[in-house]
Image 1 (cartoon, helix red, strand yellow):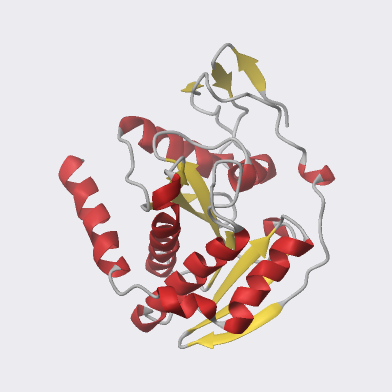
Image 2: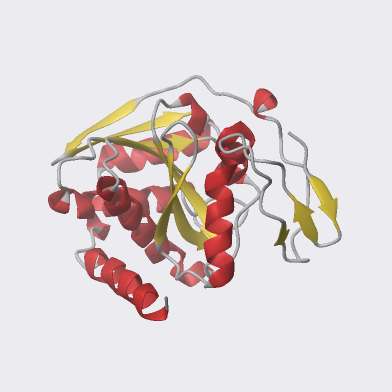
Length: 253
């Protein structure tokens, strides 16, 4: 799949789901270096290594090392910018594997109104895939830990609303636009999952955190999970802040 660049605007290919053009021009900040996305066939794929954390009350969590597409799931958490789509990371991988419709739909909404950090917005890919887009990229470093917690919590809530029984999450807050170490990311994500577990409705059964960065990153997540050091960061207020974000968008719709 090719990407054609024109100045600071970008033409995106037609969607494999609906066969329609991408929907015209999408504005991309001139501060972002536009590069061609890697083809899925050459992405390095690690051997899947499972760490079963156990059943956090109602939700079973595992950490794997590999590509998000290695996991058999219908729900993918996709980090996005608040006012535009991302062209790299999970968003780029899904776009190149037939799910550009969902990425495009997020871009349309984000262009119309900037989404608050920590908010999750669901769009549809093909073959029943749901993209749990989270507004997270570009958040300031001091707020990153809390926003990763809130993004994780919001994605879990949206997964249940959409009847998903398994979702895949990348290492939030650690990419090119992130500022968290893998240890801090693990503490934020795992504490948010445990914060959400008592509120789970029973639809969501499995959460897979997929580490694509290599052995050290996987070891950091494994250490946090094994020592349960994330439990010091369980936050009962995440439900409140998630509702604040939701109502804020409803008022501004």
